[in-house]
Amino acid sequence: MKRNAILALLLFSAMASQAQVHVDFDKKVDFKNYKTFRFEPGKVIRKLGVHDTESTFLNQYIDEAVTKALVAKGLSPTTNHPDLVITYLAGAREKQQVQNYMTNPGFYPYSGFYGMGGWWGPGWNNFWVRNYEEGTVILDIYDAHKTELVWRAYAVSSINNFNEKKFVEKQIGKSLKHFPPTAK
Image (cartoon, rainbow, N blue to C red; front, side, top):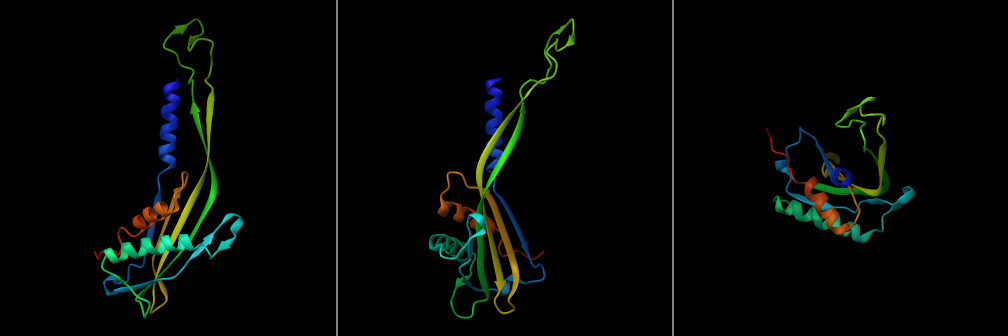
């Protein structure tokens, strides 16, 4: 029984730690026309919805991760008349996850006078409660000439044992993995 509880806890923590990355883009846009980009500082939402525009470390980490990913894809950073303007919204919130783990289903390998399971009846449940913080980074890429959104990616992940720089690098890397989209 102890082994089953440990397996359930490991499975539970593995499922909870998976990052989710979602991407959407304008399918009418030809991304081959974009050669340059400019990064603009975004917003950080702290607890209780307080906006923080002074988070220079987070801004620096996102700027570095975006620049690294886009330069690797052939785009060049510029401050004069870029083709793309990139900004972000980042935040974290406390979450709680509850999992029901049934320890005794009420079935035993023997059958006695009271039938299958004897007189023990139904099983009982154990509940695992996990408190954690969930971080979100929304990356927006705009066409600088039309001022229209052409690409949006958002990543959501558990941030326990949080290292802000590693979190940002990993999530931005996943968000820009398929940028620019290839024409079909």
